[in-house]
Image 1 (cartoon, rainbow, N blue to C red):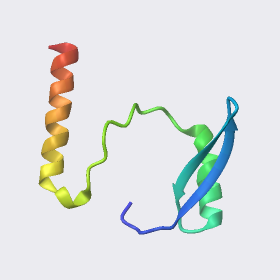
Image 2 (cartoon, rainbow, N blue to C red; image 1 turned 90 degrees about the vertical axis):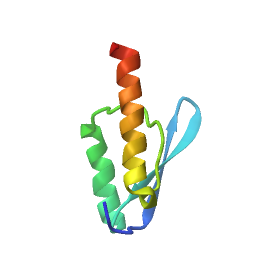
Image 3 (cartoon, one colour; image 1 turned 90 degrees about the horizontal axis):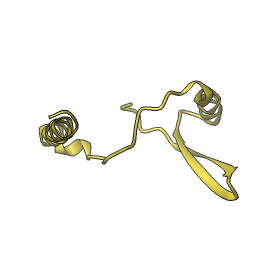
Image 4 (cartoon, helix red, strand yellow; image 1 turned 135 degrees about the vertical axis):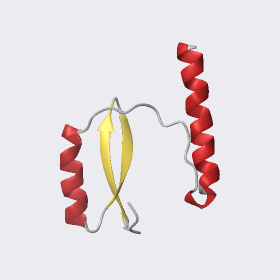
Length: 76
């Protein structure tokens, strides 16, 4: 996503706690439509880190190295 969209906040209750989800979207209606699509989401895994876009090629090298290291730890 290249757009600088506003971040819309949604709140929900789970196991006695209140949680918040941030949804970047063009408008409130767009954010509501995105929230409704969450029921169709699939699990991708656990976020390991966020790398700033400004790192460019360096960020890609870090990701490549981390992925290579994890593969060798799990399968090597």
